[in-house]
Amino acid sequence: MLGAEARDDPLCDRAMRSLRALTRGDLRIVEPWFRDPDTRRFLGGPEWPRRMLELGEGVVGQEFRGAIQTGAYRYIAHTDGDRVGYVDCGTFNRCTMYAGEGSEGPIVTESIEDATGSIAFVIDPQVRAVVWDAR
Image (cartoon, rainbow, N blue to C red; front, top):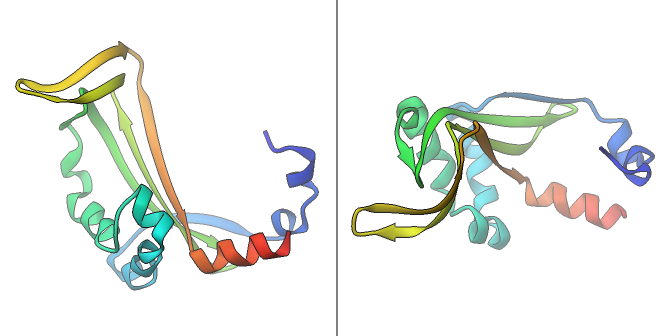
């Protein structure tokens, strides 16, 4: 739930936001965002969104860190018609505590047998800078 400060923030209130599926046509906009040092450190370099599109639904049914991936979704975020963010979502058959790889595969130290998901998002570094400067 948003705190009072965020709800009252004019930068949050006025914009029209939407998500749509990421396409190859979006890569020329999105890939440069991944040159940003913070984005590169946490997610990867400019090749990352293209690689995610190439993998597409092919990762569904595959094991990842001890869980089976059940869905893969990539979106481009728009604010007032401008592309401002990238969202990558994965869903899995269970939640695992991954502790690296062993000789026989992933080392899972704990598991919760409930469906779970992961989300990664990138905000255009120029948009991040404007929002932080405005505060």
